[in-house]
Image 1 (spheres, rainbow, N blue to C red):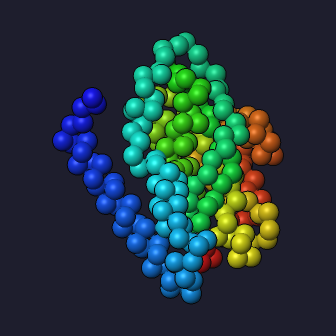
Image 2 (cartoon, helix red, strand yellow):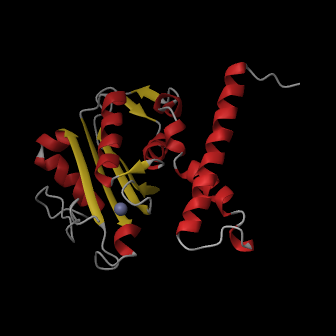
Image 3 (spheres, rainbow, N blue to C red):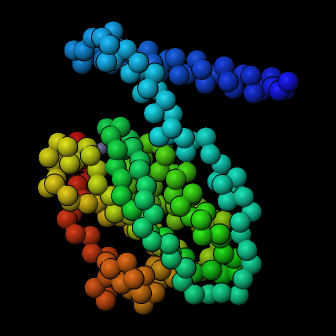
Length: 221
Ligand SMILES: [Zn+2]
């Protein structure tokens, strides 16, 4: 027989009650949108939405230290480590609509490296929350800085935002580009240039080419 602690029982009851409240809210929402929440196609929608939202915001429940799980190794290696093209999906906190794309992470170790598979996991911890792209970019860079104390960290995210694309706020297919540069990536143009050139973003001058300008907060209706 499985033993369930009182703490676990309380947590389970909380989650169940929370999911019931989400479902009730979704039913109200469907009604307010002019739908009949009791018609066949929608009857299970509140339950599905609650489940989907819990999954898509599962990053709130994850602990960075547990994710890293001691996958830090001491090395004498001070060259750039890059993990490119990490696919991610997130939800824009202004509209609760998806934004998604690719994240590129680079760092230069001081005395520690992290298992390469952990970087996509870190991206997931922060992308599975309600986010804005700028904060997501910074949180990934700051976490790597805090955990590895590297000589430098660079994070670049390119993403499509459905809140812009579906409403025609921006040209179709336009992408928002954000970057966070720390340490030598900030202070040394040559290091930054090498990284951006490896990603195909550089122009040889260490300046990130942002392509179509990202809508400012004002334009992000
Ligand atoms: Zn939005």
